[in-house]
Amino acid sequence: TIQELELKGFLTIPSIENWDNCSSKYLTDILCRKAGLRTPKTIPITYSDDTERVMKEFGNKFPIILKSSTGTQTGVGVVKVDSLSSLHSMVQMMFLYDKLTPIIIQQFIKTDYDVRAVVLNGRIIGSMKRKVIEGADVRSNVSLGADSEAIELTDLEIDNCIKAANAVEGMICGVDFIPSKNREKEQPFMLEVNSNPGFG
Image (cartoon, rainbow, N blue to C red; front, top):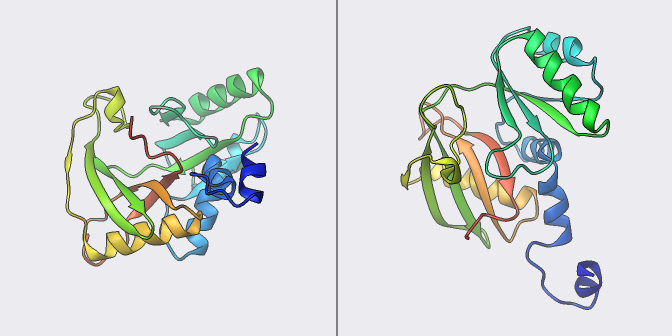
């Protein structure tokens, strides 16, 4: 097992700790906030009729983002929701198939693009701007057809990405964030940290 290899002194990438930290988006959010980073407001839903309570904490403001807290692949499991009735129906359906499904609701931040930065041993080795897919979609996954291009990060963004990687104990990881309007002076919104940056 991987744990056995680590106990024997082998380097595993990602490490078990890094994998565990990144496998839960809710835990990643907690770790990033603990490190002084800015994240979208994030609240877990614990059972199928929990939606009204959660939305009260959001001030009943829509739209919001509904996500599976466990790792999504190519953006599957990320949905923009515009009403309480839609949210309630989606959550009920998810729990119908798996009552232990970890679900989170996140603040919707309107943006034309997000950024993925790849961090290796405490330094940025690459970054790309990923444009939100045209239409009603809110996802920016290149594998779903989103356009991407290189982007130069500000000093503040570099600092925050490295802090996010350190927060999840990541030697190499992909940090996704939404830039602030004033990229030089305002912290970005950290979305998630991926223990597998997706080099394939």
